[in-house]
Picture 1 (cartoon, one colour):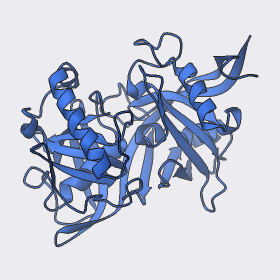
Picture 2 (picture 1 turned 30 degrees about the vertical axis):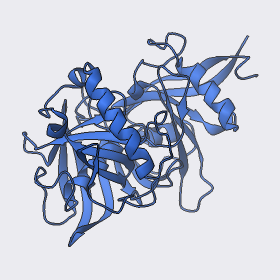
Picture 3 (picture 1 turned 30 degrees about the horizontal axis):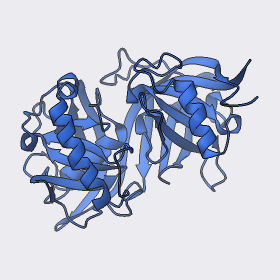
Picture 4 (picture 1 turned 120 degrees about the horizontal axis):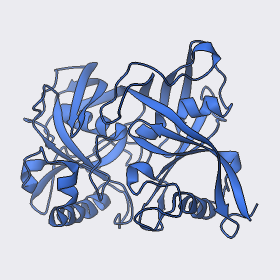
Length: 362
């Protein structure tokens, strides 16, 4: 006998994973981690004993509940399950998976449909950030069909618009945890920044790269990955993320270069031990903020307007990520007010996932 847990299996943006109602999962964090590892099949290169997809973008989990916070509709708790190691990181959040939170909350009956479009406010529990989402709900149900095309996802789908608020310093306590726009670690200039996601951002050229490398090329360069990880492990304590971040997915890593396709900045995003096939939503916001920050490592590379709100494009390996950034530059400082994006989501399956009884009793 095994324990059945109801779930929705969804693509959110360019990521994928199970979405659960918090009421169906254990509250104890250690037991929850064990359940999620069993669900995804963590610890095997193919996640053969679970429903994971062998990559960090396909071993993500969303846990939803009705919010008890005034003027918030749904709480979204994110978990990043390591595909290989028996580890679950509850510290970061994920903007791509967040793209599916609105549709999933409606599908689960946590949020009612309010018209041809349903607007809802989401609280990202991991960081405390608030996000306003608009989901297409004609005929009283979620519509996944539409003409919006998302780079990195085949075909087209209905748009899900997201407006992020209060994303500055949500984990590190400040946009620039060290108080500087640039730091030097082992001879490499970096910007350590926390906007939507704590990141260590470096110029690709400073690590011997052109900037147009594919994710596969980056992943096939163990010497480069080892060097980046050594830098990242020194950046983490400098950002107040703990003395040892070797087992944490934060800070993430951005490698930037000048845009070549009419965008604001070209980037590769590491998750952090492998290169993201496209671009993370939270990472894109952080990179956009770095692009407009005077004195950052993006200064002189990025093509940005003098003030916001402005539409910015982060070029990635499969296209661009559009970020509408509301900001004001004041001398050597920048005030990031909000960021907006459009993504898509799709319900792939619904049902129950089976977990061994020794992991979760019925």
